Length: 167
Ligand SMILES: [Fe+2]
Image (tube, rainbow, N blue to C red; front, top):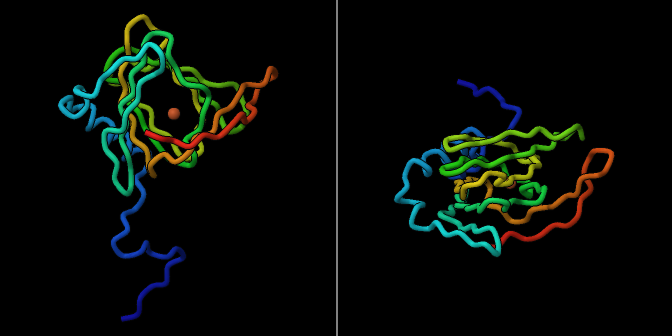
């Protein structure tokens, strides 16, 4: 029997397919549902937003982040990684910047809220609430570098710098 040619080559034997944003969302939710895996790592740091890797594999990694009121990120991408995050305590406010350059979309995520995104996603996340917040993040591949951006007065973004990710 002849085989049917395919347009895209099969992945190398033993190489798992890269997790999709939806799969990363399921992973973040699964870790969030196991407080024994993240609660012992929770710290709050008034000097700098706290973050720590909970697990890293060849294909993905999971981080715990904590956010005191007023703490947040700069506008950033994820260096080509896809990702997802879910809130386990408090409320986070996200502003996502469309690739088209249009106005950012803001949304609040309370405990149980989830965002999943592809490799070109640019956003800012802030604890604009009055209570400390905790979130679980999953990325694939593991974060290697992130670029940061500044908003232009008339809309759109300007790249500011790229930093390696250490954890
Ligand atoms: Fe992010």
